[in-house]
Length: 424
Ligand SMILES: Cc1cc2nc3c(=O)[nH]c(=O)nc-3n(C[C@H](O)[C@H](O)[C@H](O)COP(=O)(O)OP(=O)(O)OC[C@H]3O[C@@H](n4cnc5c(N)ncnc54)[C@H](O)[C@@H]3O)c2cc1C
Image 1: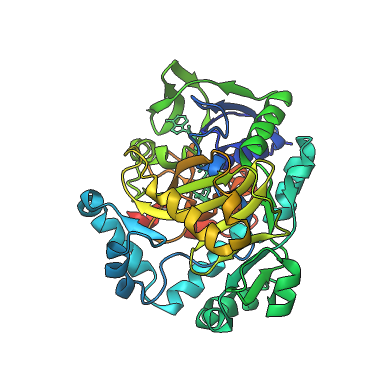
Image 2: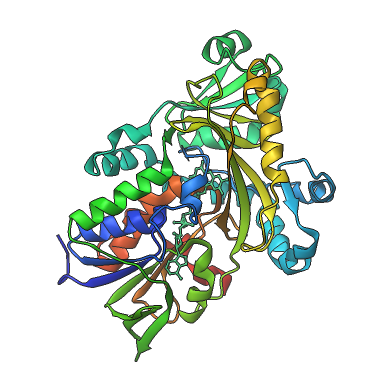
């Protein structure tokens, strides 16, 4: 129950972050108004089309030491996992410089990894709980995730990251060629080594899961407000209402969880956060002729490959471009080309039926950490955005931090590293 008298709390955005935050705030005894102009977890949300991994081992930021040396190659290699649209290069230059700087030493990576691990560690158990309560327990599957490499040298080249995982207590198992063949008979023999994150899991259908969480919230007395938030009414430092496309919504607290839409609203709440879209793509092959026993990450494709009820989902690519620029479906074709390489015996089936193609916006800060904490201009507004590549994984811990901030309870761990003030 609420530590304080029940409050009316508006949660802006019904992606995975807003939904989990809304449920935790409601669990603490407060009235929740969930503001979302679209379907919760619908195709507009990053939470819909991702690789669906719940990965306690997602401790490494994308920017690592030596990245700057690879940037020219990324710019030139149109078929690699990273790309910058030339016309967006100038507007992204400042963010990219901060991104490279954030990963310039292993000391910075170790610190960031600890701060990320606090958000990742209990992800599967926490999602299992939400899913059971929402009546969709079957959607959370703890089957492990396997990073696959052409040989052990690829794994050895990443030894520092794996060592940090080990030190933090992330459980993983090295898998030699024979065992890999047994676990993944469909996988090309070109991949001869694997590392399995034993405790990782997968959301079988992230869009359906988000929809189920929204139904749970409403069944418990929350309200879904079909509107777009456009600002905040703040008087004498206190929040009076969230301004929406349907008029003001009176509330005492607000949570800003609008994914890539959060930057403009955060500015109104006093924080200029460098938030850009790392756009990603997915392709779903409806009848691939294979079902994987675990999610896969090929070291060359840097993408998630997972079996879902809709088919084989290939999700990945990082494209630095404006969030609303038209999709570049060549990025989806690249994902498909990796799938053909990974499963050569099945490749002829991959084009037998129409693919579902999707593009979404990862809401990304340059330093590999989200923004979670009170807004600088009004402490009644709590930020919860910027989870980039790992929002599904980090949603439950983010939600618990946010609920403690709203409710006045003690946070489970130190929230200071996630404050938006680090960008001031
Ligand atoms: C290709 C790809 C693969 C990924 N794979 C993984 C993975 O395997 N594991 C993992 O943990 N993460 C993964 N991610 C990242 C993850 O999907 C995101 O971090 C996460 O979904 C972000 O959730 P969110 O709730 O912040 O944003 P979103 O899911 O984008 O939701 C934001 C919501 O806010 C709404 N909104 C926006 N503006 C407003 C407004 N003004 N008023 C009201 N509502 C508003 C939007 O309509 C939307 O519904 C992946 C992402 C991509 C693109």
